Length: 128
Image (cartoon, rainbow, N blue to C red; front, side, top):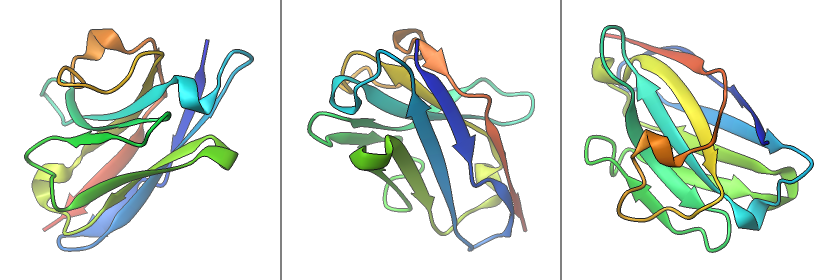
């Protein structure tokens, strides 16, 4: 089992930036053996994929709604994946979750069922 802890959420004005962190740990966790995805859930809406990154090769995927504004990166020494969010819009308001899968990010990266472990989420609120 992988434990995931998100941090970095908060309140920001439209056009601003935030960086979320997802720290992974667990007795069986090896950074290169997992992919980490970011998902978000707005009030009254279903949870949707935002981005995914492979621990092994850094390959990443983005939802069309965030591509060009969000950047996923990682620090293997810290077992941490980051989500840099720029040009934030009110539609980005949501609880953001990170999730881990022992597979890799691929064309189906945004399917929630592929992820085995989830963090508790961090709230991001963008004021207009």
